[in-house]
Image (cartoon, rainbow, N blue to C red; front, side, top):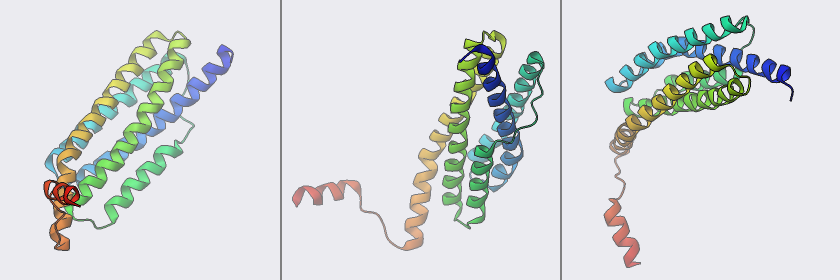
Length: 185
């Protein structure tokens, strides 16, 4: 692929990410409002601030390229945001809702991590050093956000399991007791 084609792909991918980030700017307040866990709510609010900075970085990259960031709708993020909205509308108990919101948010984070990884590689090949630095910084922030979501899920998923058990009136067998029964069999 010659440099002109790669640069075209790079700009198109940047437009896609720009659309994705702007969709997240609109979606994160809804996720924060729906979250029942204070830690999750704060996490979404903090990520909103960070996402606004991601948009500003992309705008600086577009300005340096002499390109407009407009003109492309990220259909992947549109679908992920729609799934998050559906999660909110399902009427789940609070801990289950929070677990679902984390799941939806992590899918969006993984999408962004993949997208930023690609444009970082393109920027490096195109010797867009300043853009590469900005994109790599955003990529690392997206990875850290995903890690924070994983940490929150460790606690919230257990709460969702306990909420489900108390609602159904059944308890899952203790793992030690289950192992003992399996060993006896």
